[in-house]
Length: 131
Ligand code: HEC
Image (tube, rainbow, N blue to C red; front, top):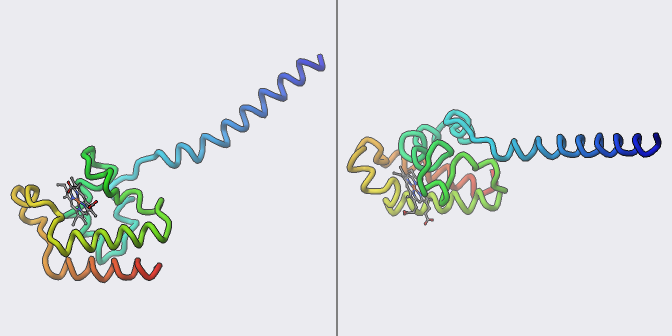
C-alpha cells in the first residue's frame, strides 16, 4: 500500500513537471502569423517590411533568408541583438542589397523609395538607442 502511494505520487509529480515544461516549449516553437509579425514593428516601418521583406524573412517563408533574418523572431532577441540586427538592416538597405535584385526584376513595386529607406534608417537608429 505504502509503495503504491509512493508510485502514484511519483507519477503525479512527473506529470506536473511535464505539463510545466510543455507550455514554454510550445510557446517557443509556435509560428507567428503575418499580422503577429508585423505587430512587432512600429507603423512607420511595418508596411515597408510587409511589402518588401517579410515574404522571405518571416515564419511564412520556407527559404534560406529566414536563417539570416527572421522578422517573426524579433521579440526573441534581447536589446543588444535587436540593435545589432537593426544596424545590419540599415546596412543592406543603404547598399541597395535588399530586397535582392532578382526579386525586384519580378516584383519592381517592392523596390524601396527614398522615403521608405529614410523611415527604415530613422527606426533603426531608435533601436540602437535601446528603445
Ligand atoms: C526574395 C527574398 C528576399 C527579400 C524580399 C528580402 N530578402 Fe533579405 N535576404 C534574402 C536572402 C536569400 C538572404 C541571405 C543572404 C544572401 O543570399 O544575400 C538575405 C539576407 C538578408 C540579411 C542578412 C545579410 C547578411 O549579411 O547576413 C538582412 C539584414 C536582410 N536580408 C534584410 C532584408 C530587408 C530589410 C529586406 C526588405 C527591405 C529584405 N531583406 C528582403 C532574401 C530576401
